[in-house]
Length: 170
Figure 1 (tube, rainbow, N blue to C red):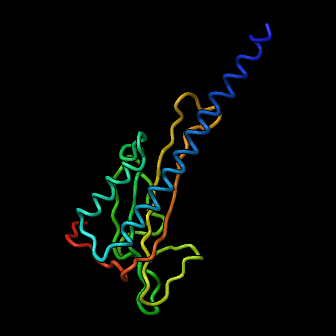
Figure 2 (figure 1 turned 90 degrees about the vertical axis):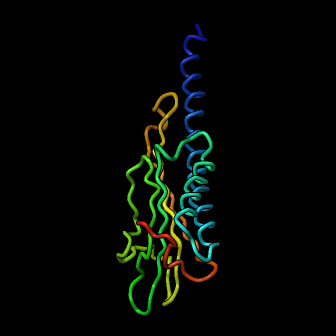
Figure 3 (figure 1 turned 60 degrees about the vertical axis):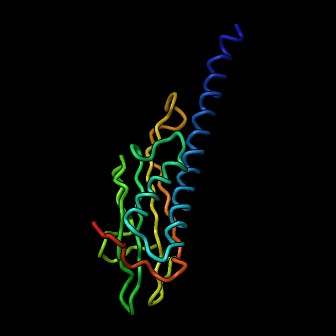
């Protein structure tokens, strides 16, 4: 009789723990995707379209079993500031994954919207990588339901600004 009362509660705790752990692991993976992609781009002197596509493929490798190509999206932006003008998105590439998240920084050619703690002086640049991922529960959504996970990473280019992409085809 006691088992009949305790079993549903134990199952809820066990399955809830599994779902919560999956959610936290996915959030960590998304953070790693954003940080490692921004780091890779910022290490380059020049970036080609093929390099960008390889970085998008690498983001899938970081995710492991979870697929970022069907439920996620990676956006890479290069933001620079010229003179006294406000920062501008010089170029931007989108992995065109299965998530419809748009850049919070802005679109290519437009003024960039940066957090207040990201300050660019004249001639400075920053690489911004945004990652969206749609987390879906494996078992049930009582503890953690369908949620969008969003991460953003900012890295300064090591060799100046990356104002143009070789082989630019939009």
